[in-house]
Amino acid sequence: MATEKDLLKARLCDFLPEARVRPDASLARHCNWKAGGPADVLVEVHAAKELIAAVCCAHATHQPVTVLGFGANVLVSDAGIRGLVVLNRAERLVFRGPSVDADSGTNLALLAKKAAVKGVGGLEFLVGIPGTVGAAVYGNAGTGSTWISKIVEDVQILKQDGSLVSLSPEEMDFSYRHSRVKSTSEIIVSVRLKGFSAFEKQILKRMDEFMLLRKNQPGGSSTGSVFKNPVGDHAGRLIEAAGLKGYQIGGAEISAMHANFILNKGGASASDIRRLIEFAKFKVYEKFSVSLKEEIQYLGDWS
Image (cartoon, rainbow, N blue to C red):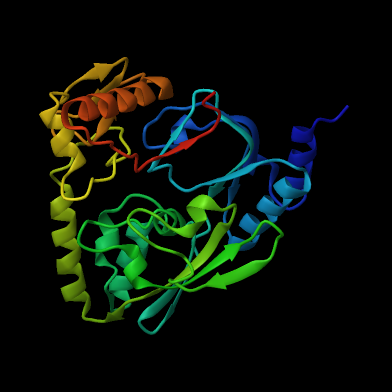
């Protein structure tokens, strides 16, 4: 008898090449931390219409769906993720003067570089942020001095009932590392971003300045900043002051360069990383009575 997984795979293969529909596929290679278990079904989409169709297939077969960009800000459990995981590689870009319509799977660095060639400024800060447009809007990514929410004009989302809706920045309910889609089942399909006209040479100079700031961050397998900065302070400073730089659990280590980074030093499980996160939270609260909040998202079965 065909299982729900078999039915989902069959429906996906109706409109996608079978090579892009993979049951029981490892997710570790698709995440910056290089840790985590398998997806029940993993599918790679290359266009917005494929993203919409894949999500609707999951809904039709009563399977949960998770959309993954480049896995730059997530920790997937060792048990993996049930249902459908969609690797979003929809990267269509359409420039309209100083504005650009970008599919949600667009690489942020690629977007910034193409905007420079088109003479569109204001997107330079995106060049140093790992991940996709959809993920950046989902978590209101930024550099500390500016945020993607400041340049969002419109967000097209796919609702649970299969309808497409355009939302304004106000309707997206942006705040520090937050947007409304963090608490809904909505999927970001595309985003319109507004820049300004500028000379390519000036834009490239600004991009170099942003990349220079990133050179002081630790290398290796990590997801960038793990914790949000508490009001008036920095998570990295608190973790360092708690004496945790270089502290290790299994293959996971709090970076000796920047304490808000956790590195996979080799063979770290997702459980190692989670235990280290919880330990850092405990020690910071014990010493400073400050409750650190994760910036990263936990995906999969953590029971």
